[in-house]
Image (cartoon, rainbow, N blue to C red; front, side):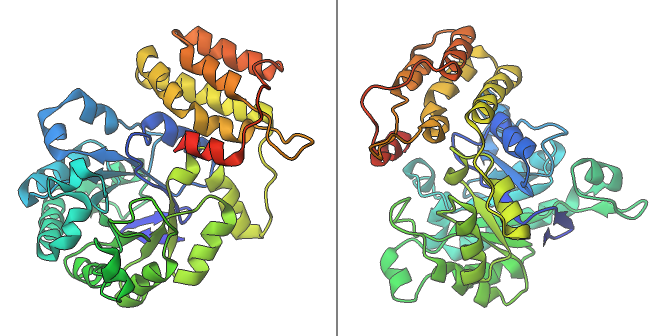
Length: 379
């Protein structure tokens, strides 16, 4: 178990705020399958929220089932970030998170995301300002409970907790020389009221290449010395990866991102493995196809058919990864005809028809796919 300030999570497994992928439909799928302690929205622009732009409002959309939920803000202006935090509180957030780890140019060129790792005073000032704002906009106990926060004393007011997500540092050379800023930054954030930090075990320069540096996460755990929980993040694709991260870093929880895109049942299987040591059997083909149908239906419900078609086109390679069956020659049966049928579909019924045909044994075969080719296709 892990507590984020006043919030005690049911599991110590968190769904990362995956840019472009962590919409309400996907969060719902992961929650329905089980094992999720906290799910986070996509990265949110506070300016977009405050202006009420359609994109930002869609990314922040939540509901009563989607609880507890973290809303992650990115930016570099303390006042605007504080206003964004207030908006998040007023629109259902159980946790507010500040992104200090995104390595994408469009974020860092505006001094947000992991660019804050190059200016620790700015990073800490933003956090301190947001904490001050959260102190001003507490919610009542009934509302806190509705947001998945658990029961509180009658008449109590609850302050929404603030967390931060970071990387090890900007330059890989700094990490390799023992000069990563993340341990120092984590201590300073704790000083100003941040209740937990998530550490992605890569530098900004590494982006998503190379292996996660568990030793770097461990340094942050050692630096905070139990004052606040540290959540590890990076390269968790199987239950064993999560257990290894917990064991080798001493972190309190694990945040899973891209590993869940093809395996949304990863949280359920990981929690079971952590509790019992049992490795779950993979879902059957029928069960996996049911997940795809459910996700597609949720996208249509929460948005519209146009959005659902766009997203299923983007994500079919992730979903199809585990649908490949091994052949007698050791290679994997191709599912390219199925993926292509989804991609050329122009209506929602055509998508559903393609899923039905695949389940009936069609849209298979052709040139066997190498595992590497599937991974590249899904990147």
